[in-house]
Image (cartoon, rainbow, N blue to C red; front, side):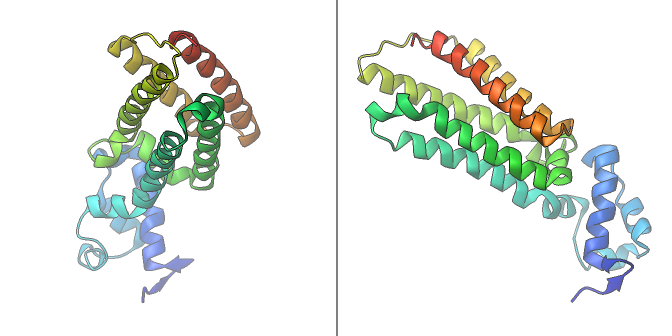
Length: 207
């Protein structure tokens, strides 16, 4: 059991101090010594909780990274498993539900999600957007195959343009979280953003 220290357990205090340090300096420049010192414990005592700065960072952001990544993968899988004829009808609905789910989750865990998006360079978590882009690229190609199966011609999309557009889409979405826009404004921006990108993708796909 963690010892009580101030307003919470020692572990809670470590996490609180670590989040402040990581948010201010980023993972690479954050000082484990500063974190330990601010909690009022020795380095040796800290190692009773975590073996390294890397393990500490993962303990803080790991579950949130997995939620965002897995929620996105789940939406892609749910869409791919639908009958081909139904996919064009519900594409926007499924992607919209997923984006709002991630948005609401991120606002409930704002510090942790900002750590992933802004402060994770030097860790595996820095690749979240790149991973999502690759998943979306694969999903886009699969959807184009479905359109062709349905007899709805869909032209080849230049891979560089495709990558740029999808990357831009995710950066646009995550900017709402990074800048901590009021949730009501963020909801409106997501709605407008979805309308913009949906219309653009339909045009590029020849639909």
